[in-house]
Image 1: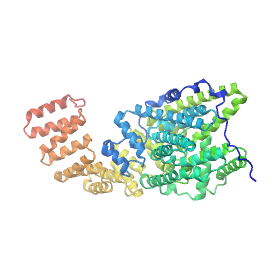
Image 2: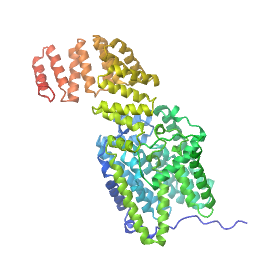
Image 3: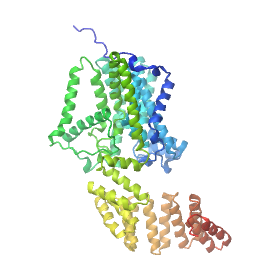
Length: 627
């Protein structure tokens, strides 16, 4: 005969007064305002930060800033880096509101992070967990979140987490009331989360863990069946994202060939790494050292062995207390997509990243706060003091960590200080140095990259490009050829090889390379431009004109492209056709001496001497005219 049902394994329904404090009796709007104010304070050093690494691929590109561009975001696979249409629609709207003002993007991300903390607190209160607002404050202020908040691209984390927790809150209410309208609202929020970042696919499994924790078992009709559509939607979006990672982003090849045993071993190490960073958040790096998983190395199996041992202990105690096992399942389950069983592009430089555990860390903070609630019943004053000191310490660490996100240069320099083997940081810092006129310094970093990663085609190409900047075309050519040997379809390297050959006077030899680059990437305006320039060098002006025309269609906002097209038309005997392009160049850059000079010249050829004199005078008056 069965005994009476076991009571739900719930913690006390109200937070301990030892750590609750008066602040948490404020109305919800005031609590959010407080969280937002704290967020702005601790993230203040990053608010004026510049665009970082791939931010330019997330802040909406010029060709997507129209209503037609918004349609492409939703209906054209490949229009954006990943198929996250809600995220890129948010960026589209933000650009419409404030353009390229990075301060506004940073403030928006802090506001979203505060909203996540607020919804987290509400969710824990709905689950009757103690010290809900302490958990929210810990999450808000913990420096492991800096990468997700201070990096504009990671709005995918903060925005998706808002939808994730919003869906969880509404579904928990549906679980109590069973109203179809609540289920529909929760489903819509879950779909918005999925279309912002696919890691939120873990939500239905997380809800099932919560229901098991509350009830001790799962009922198929009540608990599982309503979440089946969510599980299927999550699986579908997971497949799409995995396809994008593999085919469009490049998460395939030698860097991702791990056998199953190595992946299991890696997963154990990844879990302990993230736990360690939550407990001791130092140092926190943009690029962590990349481990070399090797199933034949015995000590590397200690990580999964320790994880299995911990899981076994939690399973053994779950009949008396399910909370710890539930929290562990939530933590590991949310991390599952980045444990190493699926290939994601960042694995090429590191198997771990702080932003990977943004959602997963919520369960950790819930456990810590619940522990504080239990301690507060026995040591109320000491618990209050300890909680306050920990919050202040975490806020200080977050403020300090935020400082390195002020610019890409400070970010990469800080990374290399702690991890000098971070080839990605060397490579990206080299690009910054070269673009700021320090090609000689950039070369040193690229040479380091090729020592660390000998077969990296972009580094070979960029090294050749920097040598070109230093007028060392002969030295650049072997690097372009090596890049093409490593990556035969590398259109940029093919084009650069043509530029180097033309710089050495080998223009006829260069022409096939420009043609090949344009064929490999039909949207590559530089290839068409250089093809036209090479034809001009051989005095084949009429042949050059169509290439400049195609280049202009691809990059109509380029002053240089407009100038070269105008010059080609003028040299091809069409000075009248050149005038609109010089005028466009002046409109794009009112301080362009070259555009004013060229326009004055063609006007003089057409006998429009008065107009020519006006532009010649303007050219002389402009800064840099050499008068």
